[in-house]
Length: 99
Image (cartoon, rainbow, N blue to C red; front, side, top):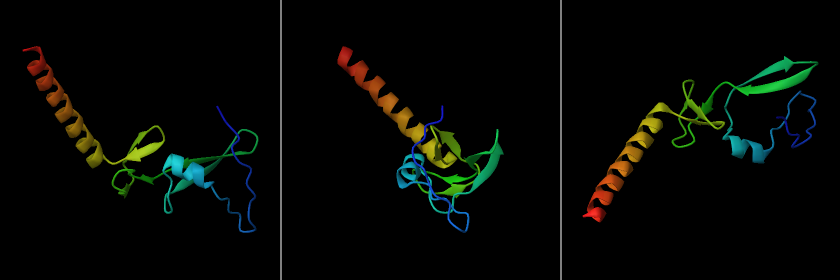
């Protein structure tokens, strides 16, 4: 589904500014690389090639994409450890409650 959020003017240099609220929502920052493609009858499609981890800021090509946000493998592993630790604590807590 495509939603028209903003109409933007192309500068003389051919630049288009991505609105701030979209950059924030998608975690796009300066230095992120995009590919511009022509689709259909002349529509332009912007696709992000690289991004940065929303947790640590690391910029690399091999990021995990979740709901149009990126996290690096190191942060993903850290999140998994935190979640596993929390689950262990919940199990231990449940065992104590039932006794």
